[in-house]
Length: 111
Length: 121
Image 1: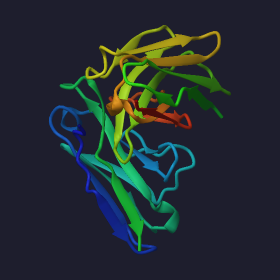
Image 2: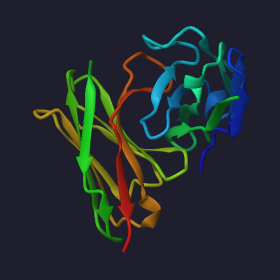
Image 3: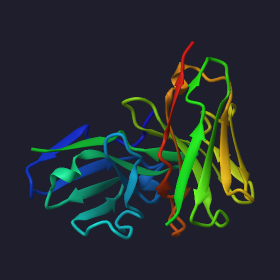
Image 4: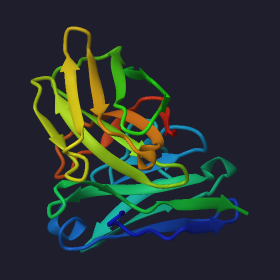
């Protein structure tokens, strides 16, 4: 179902930097559609972390950053904290499917 | 600070109609697009459809034949109806507001608390 591919899991030690990839194709990210990122803590609704590839909503710390290149995007979290343990999803639009699409999701664990 | 509060029946039988309503508190209804998004147990997120204050709608093509989204601007509410549900429609359903910042692909900046809907005979 998901057309944006993410690694199932990423882990890191406290204080480390991790990155999460989001791979699409020429109908979505490669077509120029912006990528957004969400954090979902267990049992809660997703929270917008990054919009328009690299912009942060008010209140999101600058240790969280995003980037986009060609048909993929990345989310980076530096200074990893135990509170960062959550599922992370990328999101964009797909012109062939004519709908908003989400990534497969990545579970971040802090060792 | 805008908040979305949603409600609706949590247990349905196959072939029944799912109906969920989302109310907007502390913010404007006009000038925004509003969406429904769902998440099956242990799965990822799926966009269902959207509506704006003028009543303009768009749907996920895979659900378009069964989904209807309507709005009551006087109450600042919008409603999802999904007909002929099956077990495959079991999921947590979220309402969400589209970010107004101009981008080439809308983001969802405010979410409801989610409603678990189970379809079982």
